[in-house]
Length: 420
Image 1: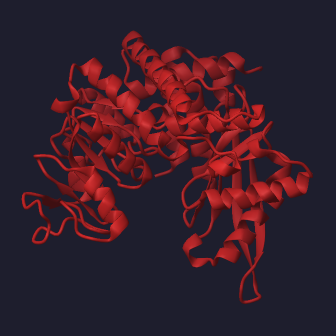
Image 2: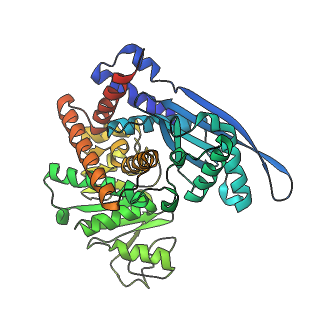
Image 3: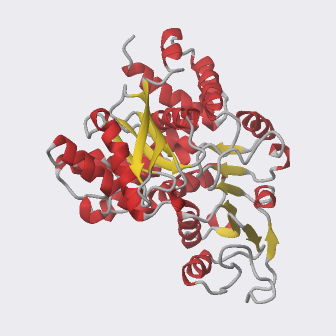
């Protein structure tokens, strides 16, 4: 399933709804540029291995290109093009002054030593440094890249340009110019829109059941924050499987378990619940696929892309979906869900808390400021709530699903700044 083809289908759908200018529509089908780089790395055994990398700079009508760099064996040009397009849409949807970019290197980072990983990271910057910078293109961590890797990249960039530029990279450790609140900002933004959705649907938190697929950083924080607000978390899963408990799951126990390596509550290290040894005997082990089809109020896909497809969309029983993952729903599934009356809060809105706080980090770096966590979260809440309300209004105005409405709002802003 080609992600860039999916992205273009979404573009075409929104363009038709809003009667997007034909010339601007045509321009937006193509990234401004895609860099292809070959990165030679001296391996620990003395040999040289050449890795292939990309940087897609999609559109900068609203501001500098912005987007992560991922290290993954399945990275492709079409993937980074799609992700850079979605980043442009995401920034515009929440009305922050950034464009869309994305980078990647075809590599399994788990197979590299720390030294090899550092040489690869510095080598990538050596190939793209003329095209990045706080005033051009600002990368960030993504799949299998870390604050440490970002630190190496920033160091290499500053060595090459000959001056300090802390805003060239976001997702940095706080002591190196990172922003307070960044570690949980994606989930926090998702919580703000979930809360707004609950109000629109007339549901109180304590009456809202939630299933979360994916228990990494975003999914686990989403579970913790929603739980503290009174939402009933009935199912969680990781890459090995999941657990379901109708009476509710305490995600704090799940997090503690994953950190400690012990059996706690209803969730077990690296896989599903040990039903015999777990203290909550009424838990049920379920697959990731089963979790998606539970009868819950809100489903939160927070793991992989393309998990809700035309094959399983008719089996989705959730009343609403909040997409914390990137691209979890295919265009074909979107149509089915809309016809069924399922409200889907799209990824370009639901998970935009991460890039919004990355914008805050960049803004603080450029201005030489440092904001408190309280100030960061107040600013984030204002942006996420405002964006949700605008997109909901567009949904009502055009009679479309929320994804199309989000694209319409985003394209209005981008097209308004484009020069043809």
